[in-house]
Image (tube, rainbow over all chains, first blue to last red; front, side, top):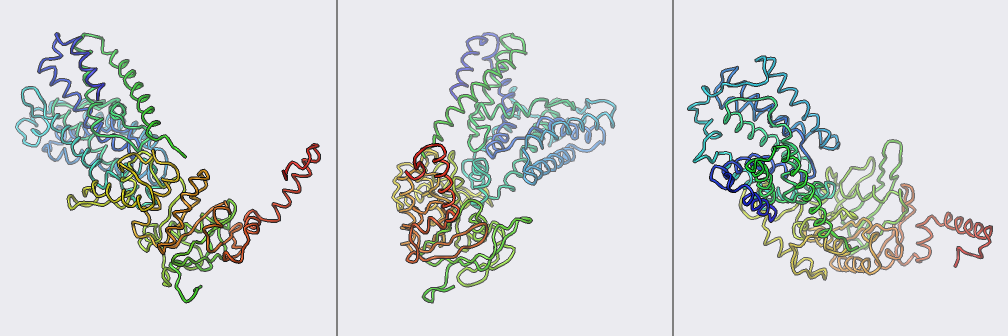
Length: 315
Length: 276
């Protein structure tokens, strides 16, 4: 949290005069933060429950393509495309979760299959039906569609994605901290066996969370596709890692059992401010990845230190 | 089996359990009455864990019967056993170090306010804090703040948290899986004191331990298991601590080992190293 302000102040001083502090600049990094925050918040819940979803990025590509194809290729209304995309996402999320809890294999491996499979599927599907991997010219179909407005509206340059972020983060926070389900999430990550012995439906919790990560990946895909007016099967590359990094910078433990959604909000802001700050400072985009590495490493080391202090056993 | 005409809270009769060709339990019978501490003793692989898993509904027996309050039951899940008042506190696994004390206390049986729906009902944190605090106080643990992480508790306190939780949620029989094995002498004494307290409150206790010096002071009956078979159940009066130790560690084998070690010591030129 403190880190976010430090990063912000740093860039305010460095590139403030070049547009970083303007309303447009702020809207810009808020939009990036919102995109990270939407997938990061739910990824955080999944990580707290002790699992990963590496298929999120490919899911963005695949569901975006499903939406665009059903609109542009099959001439369906937007809401049918959304239904198809979300239906597909929830089904794949269910399969991910079901395989993880049934086989007991690490979710890292199970969702790695989705990581490759969904990307390949998106590319193959697009090429098969349209001969290209970028499906564009959706604008004429989208224009004036009231359902599409939910994903494309903006006020004074602040896109509706920020509202979606606030909504997703608020729901995640309330579920995690205030509900019975939230206690189960912590319990699953603390020790799945012990939680099961205490009566927590561990399998159900994990499957629901895998479906949720898939659903928010789809939500982000819909926002991107309808906002830009085209779908690229290569969209969302590395987003699964950025979602995990967002959660980890926000204080969520990679080993599960501990984390917050509030922290994830600041994680998303930190990443977005860094990315935009570097852009306004006219530094090569490659440096973003270097700073990402630095931020990630320091966050993980800090988390580890805090965890060791908090869970210091006095046997 | 009835003692003084009282019905045991839980009784297993002639229970067997096989894992493939491995005999985990063969024709074992145990019963627990209110206010009674039954100790299950035996070496690793004797079948202690299998027996308590049958009693707590983790898996069904392949043969034999389970009775609760004299009525035959078939547990399908651990949940079924818990609903009949049979609670199990597993070693180490009972408490999540990175969750708060009160969250731990209510894990899996969350107290909720009227708000929300299904598993999204609101977790009543204030009530959880208050109840966890009073219940732990009953066990002699005074926490200022039950929202502190359970990882900050000592090992004995964590065991007590798990026991307090089981009792609060209506356990009439508490099954304790090696509650003292990872603890120092003082911490173990704390846990043993709670066992006696639970017994005084009329609960049945099943205590699993390697350590006869922990079992003997608190136990009323002792069932000794060896490679899945019961070597018998003994009342405290019929049993000397020394004999208990002998039976637990497989008596004859221990003598043999002692003899062997003495021989080894002699051959190495060390005078009676094993006995002093």
